[in-house]
Amino acid sequence: MPEFDVIVVGGGAAGLTVAVGGAGLGLRVALVERGRLGGECTWTGCVPSKALLHVAGVAAAARRGAAWSVEGHSAPTVDFAKAMAHVRGARREIAAAESPGALRRHGVAVYEGTAHLPAGIEGGRRRVRAGRGGGVVEVDGRSLSSRHVVLATGSEAAVPPIPGLAETRYLTNETLFDELDTLPSRLAIVGGGPIGVEMAQAFARLGSSVTLFQSGPRLLPRDDPAASATVRAALERDGVTVRTGVRLTRAIPAPAGGRGATLSAEGLDDVVADALLVAAGRRPRTAGMGLEAAGITVGKDGIQVDEYLQTGVPGIWAVGDVIGPYRFTHMADVQGRAVLRNIMFPWRKRKIDYRVVPWATFTDPEVGHVGLTEAEARKGQRANVSAVHLPLSRVDRAVADGATEGFIKLVLRGQTILGAQVVAPRAAELVQEVALAMQHRLPLSALSMVHIYPAYVYGLHQAGDEAWRRRAKDGLLGNVALPLLRRLALR
Image (tube, rainbow, N blue to C red; front, side, top):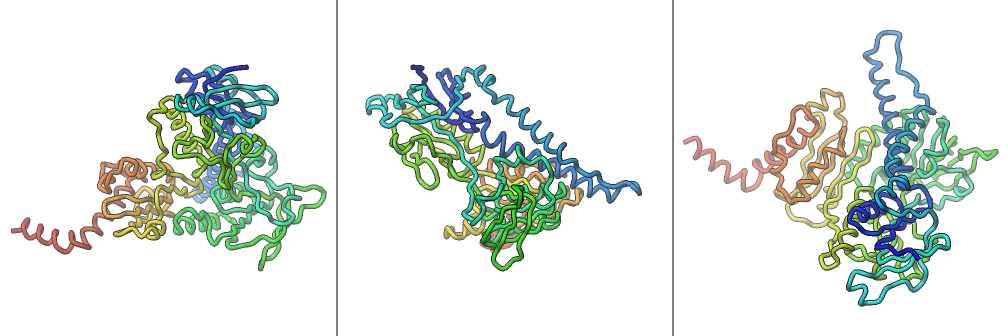
């Protein structure tokens, strides 16, 4: 029976971090994956969606540039087959570094198959204290033993219980980039979260007539309402029909086995689509591994772990989308590194700090988010909460680029930065500076550092200045201290 220090179940972002990192530390590591190594981000999420958004953005830029073109010339038409070839090429290039051969060169033993945890695998208490829990993992009938098992099985598309939907040939992000080879003339999208809004804009810019249905009152419900409104306006300008606050009552499959469907909703005319994309969120992938029989607790949000990412079974850990609470590749990486530390140094375990978790939605303009929204800060009954809102029309680079749709918003409590929302080109990069300041508990004055002009990041400098001006105008500083200092200085 093979003996390992760590068996990793799942070859996505979290699993790869543990496997490659563990092998680099000299651990004997096995990785079990039943599908493609690289996981959702490489094959069905971040990489292909951003590659398609890039093509769609180039097409949109070409159309905008036609306003300055020589008479008689027009913007080119996108060849969808070539666009998808670019998407699949980007996946292949990135996946090459995550292939079984690449992992074996790192010292990881790769097993292709379905993992199952037999009942009664937990180790004794004495072994647990020594950091030697774990047990056995069966892979298609073959048994592997290990001191530690790390579950990193990821998540899968959640499908809402709309009558008739199961009978349609709907797409999800897991099938979209492999199965769709022809641009749909009419595309319906169910879900107004990041996947839904990104793909709505991409396909509209590529030439589809897109209708987006969102059951909630606004798009991107985890972001600031102003960000949601800005994204909606951007989608509608690109031709997307946005329907919020809608309850879909039925989906009727297209005839003759077609990929499309007819969608019915309360109070709206039926929408006929040539393709249907379901982007209604994610759910943890926990079925088929025998987790409950092995003594591992599984809840609605996934495998339950303690603050050190260990399950209730000693030596069995879980990381990534299968536990949440943030289903992002960058958080999977953070959790994977934490588990490695806790395995290597059990006497000095590390907790995950979820206080500062940035994320972004890659529409045009992008939406960058970190920390609390203004509503969340005020709901928490925090004293002295304020917000600074700087429109991009005051950022000179945005004016020069003709990209003034958006804003920078800082949520503050005195000098403490509680959160930020940035809606702008490259907002994912801009919000990272705020995240860095928050991570190291730097005050608002940290944003007064020297910034390059003219760059979008200079807007953070301006937003910080705006906060200082408000503070100087109001309160004790403005009403008492500054008048006194002015009198002393001008004597």
